[in-house]
Length: 583
Image 1 (tube, rainbow, N blue to C red):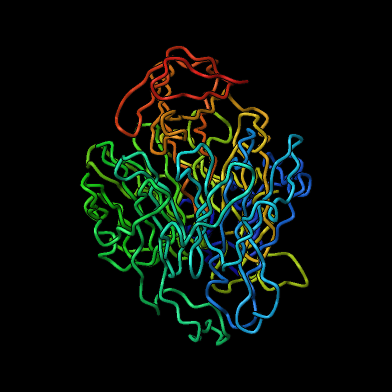
Image 2: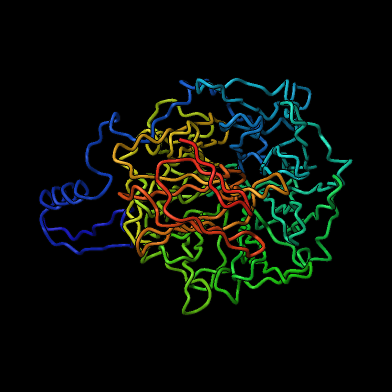
């Protein structure tokens, strides 16, 4: 009997329906052949994966504890982040993982702690939590890293469901909790955090996104009438917080004075960069179910939200979306910074391409090939990175639901979080900001289906490429080593202001190869609840050297260096005419 069918596959850039009138056997055969022809459907040999899970090999054994007790406490579903930073200044990246905690009936149990893993010279990670003093026991959410006192070592801000904490690095492998002494007082539900010097006085200030006024007594149900996690719609938003660094170890809350506290939003993600070219750091905030903010720095201690005017508040349909993670980078290699935001399932993730013609952002998600793949999934951590070092930025997204969905994990005994687990994605930039889903080429990363949240980027083994660390809700943190076999040449660059003894957050670095320029910024705070390697990584393709490197310092001053050989780690000191190069 002839049947009429519709072909559909979730990996297509947009919904594709093809009417067919054929007999049943031919129809089913056609579907099979069609699906096998799509990216991601061909058989894959696990050994071919170039993102290798090396978690157990390097001694990393962290499991996130959200304190599940059957009450569907909403913070359990939000997850926690991770920081990759060199806390002991020995030249390699260490790992700081944020933990949850018990609540309600579990309060009599020993509290889980955030965990610090120190990387040894042999690449093995040792747990240094107890000796470091970083074992915070709040219900952890996000983390940011920056040198608040300009002494040459990195300090740590931890956001919590509850009071946030600020830890000062003592320079000897230990940290001191200076929260109260420093004047930090954010009792709200803090999420992503970033450091920036918004007034260019030389000291790093702190921006904290706050989420919702959550009522733990609220009860929410799924479509089957079962208890499940609440979303943000039933709760009011909370103003974000901006702390000004006074330069003496204390901070002043300038949220009201700056204009930041004018609106009560539901912030989850944040990144800082100069978005309008005036050499002042601006702030972009991803809000959950509300218009996003683009706080443009007015240069007088105040900010104006111009997200709507600049096209980065809503999607192309004029709708606010459930924004969570943020990727920032020049995805189309035109010299401007573009934005990518992760969203809830049934929405698409959104790619905002900066356009010189409109002097603002355009929703270019569908033409970029990023709409269709994201529709069935809920994205959290994300970021641009050049995995194959061909000179353009590729894209990673980690996924996981906040409410139950179809079981995607192949198991006869699903655990609690399997109903929320989703696969992760890797997209290759095909040039000019057009992307192809190549997740099937990295099965160790994409086919171990978990409930992922945080995502951080860094060159963990100092081999010149970028590796990934993923945090999972109620699950193991996983470290993925980049072993792509045909990588191009590279440069890894730090930009340091020697007068401040620290990395120049907000500096923009441009490398020139013939007519091509590659732009990166110095800013570790992006993705979701996480902090990343502060070094700017450049893939150079076949070029064994760059014609020049230009540094645009946060105050607008320029430095240029000619004819630099590839495949080196480079440190640039502001005002010095020579590069400091290591292999």
